[in-house]
Amino acid sequence: MQTNMHKAKQLDKHDTLGHYREEFYTSSEKIYLDGNSLGLLSTRAETALLHLLNSWKEHGIDGWTEGEYPWFYLSETLGAMTAPLIGALDKEVMITGSTTANLHQLTASFFQPYGKRTKILADTLNFPSDIYALKSQLQLKGLNPDDHLVQVKSTDGNTLQTSAIIEAMTEDIAFIILPSVLYRSGQILDMETITEEAHLRGIKVGFDLCHSIGAIPHQLSAWDVDFAFWCTYKHLNGGPGSVGGLYVNRKHFGTAPGLAGWFSSDKAKQFDMEHNLTPATHAGAFQIGTPHVLSAAPLIGSLEMITEAGIEAIRKKSLQLTAYFMNLIDKELAGYGFTIANPRSDSLRGGHIYLEHKEAARICKALKANGVIPDFRNPNGIRLAPVALYNTFSEVWQTVQILKNIMEEKTYTNYENKRGVIA
Ligand SMILES: *Cc1c(COP(=O)(O)O)cnc(C)c1O
Image (tube, rainbow, N blue to C red; front, side):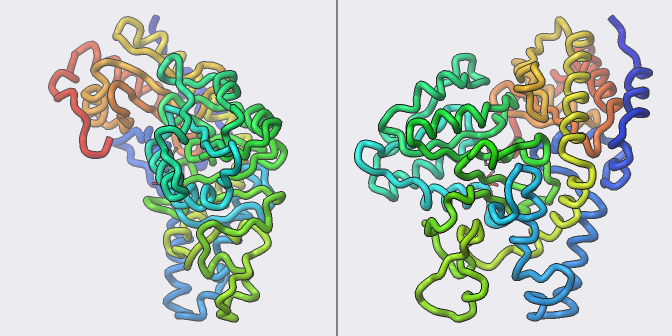
């Protein structure tokens, strides 16, 4: 059945977030569907970066305490701006470190093996960096990762069952790390139920929010999650290598940072330069050293925009975009060997579409050659992320037409079915 462009144009016309696209550096020649790997630059983020660069120009060392955004408090300021996106209190959130570094910090601080409880529970589908960090943290505690890291298996290779996660919460588990949204299939895990079940068994639980923050709302405080961490360069549009974030539930305030540094300090005491640390009495205690001011700066602009647009409205449009995408794929690409491997229901579907195809690597190359930017995930996955703040329904429609043409004409066979260095 033929679909047409008219419907897409109508959807764009009624899109209340549509005007935000003008604030982003998009290209008329490209359809950018990789915002789940690196969000695009907005003029607000650019202005914020230039603003902080200027504060260095103007104030030199005094920029730490002067100017509109004193650098000394920037992690706290940005933390407070982020808090509503995850349902947390201002003081529970810091913009600091990176995803992996924050996972190290939080594991060093909250993984306290005792008695029979000496193991960490994770899963087999998480991003490798998280698993590397957990294994090395076990080793630092003298525990063998081969038997102290338990990884929940997937029955279909793409998703995890809540029941399997709960079953794995045995009495030897001290600590759980799971992603909020799986980076391939985009499945949203039931963070509330998992947290509740973990706590019934005396287990602490933390989530990696890399693929959910900025795309879906969270209620970390209400769910009583112990801690969380994330990057800011995906759906938060902070720019390449932008500073990450962490959340620590207020009930854990007062826990000493496992990896301490002078920025873990109570700010009033920091410049006393004492050799005994007095940690901040909030999530600030989990900072380590001097903040990466210029890599955090764009977030001032991008968080302001996300707050203004509203995370509920962003989620609503994101669901509409991905539903429309799946609908077109079902209609237009049937018979070409694609499988929609992301969960279809709204409650389980994150911010991107995940297609599987045995020729995925070279189909991605053909898409790029035709101006569509997807990303490939070894061995057979194509991720397509239509982002609420800058993608349009028309772009989704065009992408499906381009993909259909690539399959019809078999132009993907012009490329090798092998991934690039970054894919
Ligand atoms: C993107 C991503 C990372 C990246 O970690 P960095 O420390 O920011 O390089 C880690 N974990 C997950 C689940 C991710 O999606």
